[in-house]
Image: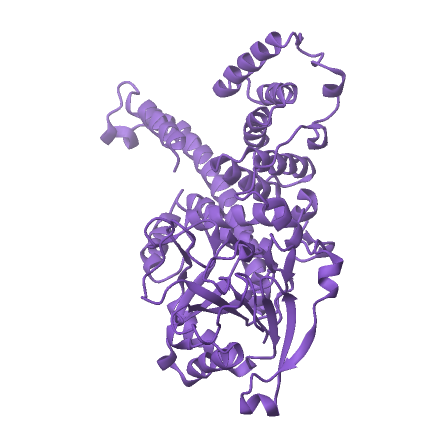
Length: 545
């Protein structure tokens, strides 16, 4: 029972108690005394009817939640891996189990449902519930995909990726949540895009999933923060038409008008500040500035992720594919397929070098130990979680399974390097928008890596253990090179020149996974014991195949 209904009930009871000349124990003894009970009963009937109507509305609302959850869960349960390979589905699942579920709990808590909510809360130690940080991460991942692959906001909200329908459309409430998460991250660019989409969907929705004033509140301020003063004022006026005493909007309106006067723009209510503002709000008319990337060649990185061809055709034309044996007896029977991707520095792709059975075993061994992937601090070499690497990983030692040992030996046979100074096999899985921004595998001057006593990381071996439907390339921005995941293949490159100096051109990145699930595993091989296996040439950067 709400506070208002309790107050109404107590008021009716008080009227009964203060009736003159009637003691509580004497009501039944005279008809005149009982007349007041008719009025009391009428009042109670009215309140009970109101209460039942509210309960029925509450149950109707809960049935709506149930229907939606059942529908979504049935769709996801058919093939969970395929369902979650879609970033929109993955985001919506996290949202359903965080902010959406809080709304369900709130409705249930209004009455006897509080006992059920308490029971659910007690099971949180057993059931896996995503956190608010998970929701934030899922939202940021969608923004990353949107920027990297130049996805149209409206198309993405309709469940379309690269022209193909992948999932259900987002509601106005879903778009609003994405905008709110962007706002909380200080990202007003994406706040404008998603709040504008929420506003567009709000006008078309028959069953509203968010209040219009909530959309306008965020949209107006973020529009202002993006430098669109007149449009921000237009949206604020629209907000004040709905909520005339909105304190923040009143203050913002005064501030915007002051700034407009300073720009010698006269604002007269009802007329707009220029001809454009007589038209409906449209982000196409706005000046919007996208957040800058974290590296100087960010634009090249994103182009390579999208599959744009940037490599010089003369360089690309000089690359070859061939079979190699490395004088290993087994490879004379079954030679290794090698594809050159770059000659300076040497980067190659070996095909069909790990079997499906080995991949399945490595995944099975690694998954129970998965933790959020980390990066090394530049100053100390200690590992830490970072937003520029989104994945889960674990490490496998050679002695954990015969396949892990065989893989290690195979890498040594193919590369000709001594694997005694190689790190354990790192296994990674990239989820929603999973990526690793441009970085180097070797320790540059001033950086500290974990000290194995083996020197710097001379080379990197990277297995691709799954195909990826869209996205997920390994790119080298300074070489204009993209390597696309192909299950069973492996990329290999030297991080250091033969003279031991780091090669700046080996800067690389893992592009965000657009659809699908990306599995990789890698070995970092160190300098120690490689002196005679990879000898120096006559030139500092000379390479021996």
